[in-house]
Image 1: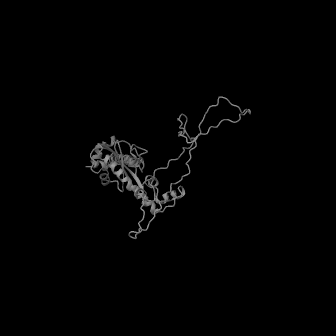
Image 2 (image 1 turned 90 degrees about the vertical axis):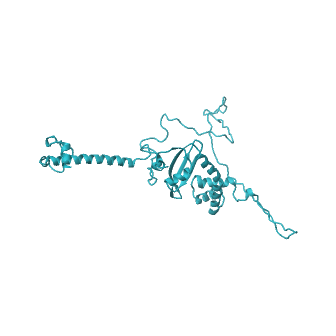
Image 3 (image 1 turned 180 degrees about the vertical axis):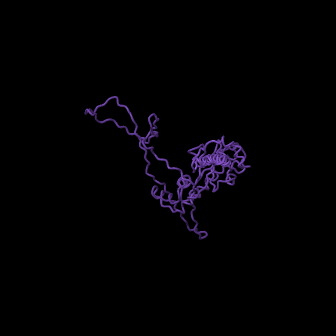
Length: 305
């Protein structure tokens, strides 16, 4: 090693002056043997290369989807995203000069009221050539009136056999909650991920409907059972497509980290929640699909097949 350092840096006359400050005085360095000086320079070069490599690796570790070209799914789910401030210090709130404005969309009205000027500043009350200049739109929910139907079931005594036959509920009204009401609870709990108690509070405060947590769970189970054939039909179409884009992202289910996988073709988007971000989850998503895979280069996809 000493010989290699000496040969790589030349003789003592060719040795360059130290670029870094040494913890000793210059006379000590001048009396240092040339071979030792060459070796010190070799260590300096190696240290510089290692520092540059460490800085490059640290920058790669700290890179996120907001600071690089990496996809959002590559961000660590265990790190909370940096909270962005709503306003930048020194900047005014609102649209910037030159930014096109966006007016509220005018919906088809259910009622129209026309307002005309009553009195001018000069006290005149007669006007000609009146024309509208602005439409003020007010959106409001009507009072929610639930449709509550009571099916009163009777029983009657049979004189022939002495039994009491009972009337039966129509099959389409066998459950205590209709399809639209059930779909609303399924939307609140499923699509928006609200807990059962949140749905319970919504039904009590907004709809004025007392309902137990157990009944809410039964409704959600029926909703899941009703949409399962449609879910499987979407999965079948996705797994028959010639090309699919596949990705995954963290998904917290009842405060537990899960993974939301998606398989998207030009016709459908098939979603699946899985507890793992692994090859096992990838295989469960695609099943027997064989086609052109478009992805962000995650290792699970690269090791497929």
